[in-house]
Structure formats: C-alpha cells, structure tokens
Amino acid sequence: MREANFDGIVGPTHNYAGLSYGNVASQRNEGAVSHPRAAALQGLAKMAFVASLGIEQGYLPPHERPHLPTLRRLGFRGSDAALLAEVARSDPTLLARVSSASPMWTANAATVAPSRDAADGRVHFTPANLRAMFHRSIEPAVTARVLAATFPDANRFTHHEPLPAAELFGDEGAANHTRFDGPDGKGVHLFVHGRSEREPDAPRRYPARQTLNASEAVARLHGLDPSRTVFARQRADSIDAGVFHNDVIAVGAGRTLLAHEHAFAEREKTLAALRERIPGLAVVEVRMAEVPVETAVRTYLFNSQLLERPDGRLALVLPVESREDPAVASVVDRIVSDPANPIAEAHFLDVRESMRNGGGPACLRLRVPLEDAELAAVNPGSRFSPGQHATLEDWVRRRYREDLRAADLADPSLLVESRDALDELTRILGIGSVYDFQR
Ligand code: SUG
Image (tube, rainbow, N blue to C red; front, side):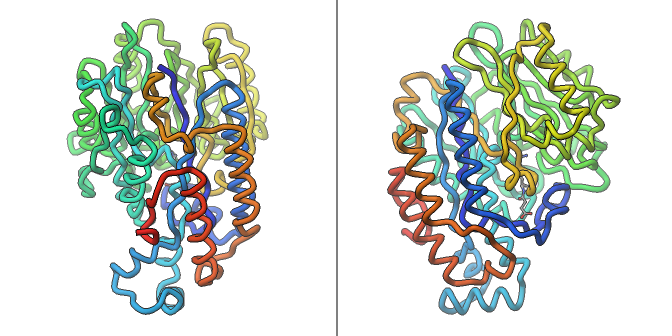
C-alpha cells in the first residue's frame, strides 16, 4: 500500500473574500487582489515536486464558480448575466460566497479509509458536508461526483453520502483525521474534533467546525476497528487563536506525529492512547516557548505534508512562510537533524496565493492510501505524469486570468471563461460530465 496525494487544482475564480471567520489569513486578506493563474501554477508546481520525491500524485478538479444553480435555488432569476448583475447589486457577499475557489483545499473534500483497515476490504470515501461555512457547504454534491469519477470501480471503492448537514454532524473531512501504521500492517486512526455535546469546554471566539458525532459516524461508516480508533478534542484556546482545523497544528504519517503541545485538549491521554496502539510511535512536539500557537498559525509549520519516500525516509513539505520566521526555521532544522525521529528532510514550497486564504500544502491535498490494484483502478487522467503536468500548465496559461478583484466576480465573461476552461479540463482528465452546466 502507498499513499497517493490528490491535490485540488486551484479554480479560475480564486479570490480573497474574507469568508472564513476564525481563519486568520482569510480574514486578514479580505479584499486583496488575487492572482488565479499564479495560484494554479503554484499548485501544479507543488504536485510536480511531490511526484519528484517518488510519491504517487493525483488531481481533483476545481468546481464551477460562480455557482449559479445555488443562486437560482435562492430565488434569483433571469439570464445568467442579469442574475449576476442583480446579485452583485443586492448582495455582493453572497456573490463572493458562490464564487470561492475553496474546493482547492481537498483535505476538506472527504475522509478516506484504506481497504486494509475497512471491514469489507474496500476503500471508503465520505465527502465532508462542510456545513460550518456557507461558501463551503455548496461543495459536497460536486465533490461526490468528482470522487466517484476519479475512483470509479464499485468493487474497490465505496462512496458514502455526506453526513446530514446539521450542527451536530459538522464534518470538515481529512483535515481532522490522520492514519498511522499500527501493528500487522493495519492502521490506527486519529480523529480530532473541536466540539462535542459530551464535553463542555468550547472555543469562545471562533467556531469549532468538526464535531465528535461526525468523526464517530465516519469511523462507523468506514468499518474501522473501534480498538484502532482514537478520538481527541482540540484545545479550545488554540481554536480561538486560529486553529480552525487540526491540520493547522499537527501532522502525522507512518509512525510519526509532529504536533504542537497545544494541539489536544487532553494531551497526555491522547498521546498515551496513540502510543498504546502504535508500537514505536515517534512523537515530535513543539513547545509553546519555541513557537507560540499564533506563530504556528501564521507560518503554517504544521500544515506541511509529511511524506514517506520510497526508501522509507520521511520528508516534510512546508510553506515558504515557515522558513521566513527564524524561530520556526530553527525548529525545522532541529527536527530534521534529530536522529530520534524519522523526519529526514525539509522542503519549502511557494503556495503563497493559497496561503493568503489559510490554505497551506497540507490543505491542498487529500491523502488516499491505495494498494497497487486500487491505484491501477484510478481514472488514468487523474494521475500525475510529466505529460499531464505540461498539458495542465498550458491549460492554466491559456485559460486563467492574471489577477482578480471583487468587482470581477460579477463579470459575465468570467463565468463563461470558467465554464469553458472546466469543460476542457474534464476532457483533459477524462472524468466525464461532473458539473451542473454540463448536465
Ligand atoms: O475553509 N479558506 C479555507 C481554508 C481551508 C484550509 N484547509 C485545511 N486547513 N485543511 C477555509 O477556511 C477562505 C476563502 C475566502 O476567504 O475567500 C477559505 O475558505
């Protein structure tokens, strides 16, 4: 089994609308001019880099934006152009909400369980309902179609419905889930939530997006062995400092966990539960005195990809912002040079366009652990290859605008350009008609 990373391709309407309360970068950059072409090329460059480390890499397409079916569902009428003009006039924030390129952050697309950990021996996918933020709550229907087209073989891949979109079942997908290697080749699954009915301590300032009820439901749906699951709550004060998903403060792979000491509400209990189930677990902790939570949020040190290379070494792929902070840079040096953990290399990549919306390297990818036969059953055009990479770069250069401002979202030609671009993309990837405008 190997872990494939499926990155979201940044969409043509990538912009900064300040839509995510509790996501510090999103709020700070509200109204800034975005650069969709550069954003998409940065994302593709990251995918090519990860592939160059010997890691299996895949593509998930952007969604149709602005999403006119949502606006029509909300009562707006008329031709596409008239409707856009009316929404832009009466509710520009709603227009921004249906225009976000947020599906790029595929760590929130779904939660995945590998076949060897599932009771029925299939790979399981549950698209996240993303109910916490309206602009993200419109993603699951298309995400479900995209996943079904990317992993089409029903004998190998099971696609569940998203959980009910109620507060009780708020689900943000794999950003709050980590699979470790447990004994006898099977996994141990860590699910992290921000909120639960059973535990009183909740953040005061910012919303806790993932609930325990949702994590438990996903574990059940995926047929995981209850003795190999650990449920842990995030520290409320960390959420209030901008840790809106667990992957902003912890990352794990294989038998290694890299986490800030303020990641979990019950730190000792959580680490003990993991150690008990994962023989030889290496816990690399970063102390508050070295890197305060605010700095972790600003630099996204923990929103790095922890990747197992074919020779077994672990590589960290971090955002360049982490190298620019001296304290964080020296922590990374310390981790990489310490023989007590298997993290052997660090690479700093530029995904600044996504970072300004609070999306680092780890947000941009969905991890899908696959056996060889399952990998062979993936839709071929969705897998990285040098040829596909060149085709996609060319597609972005031809189709994407250089920059975008809030007012541009009302431009009917942006809608047409985006649909034409996505129509071509579905042919490049060979995933069929997944968009509303194609059906
Ligand atoms: O849901 N930002 C995304 C970032 C998601 C990051 N994902 C992970 N941590 N896995 C969010 O908050 C901002 C959009 C805007 O403000 O324009 C946004 O949706």
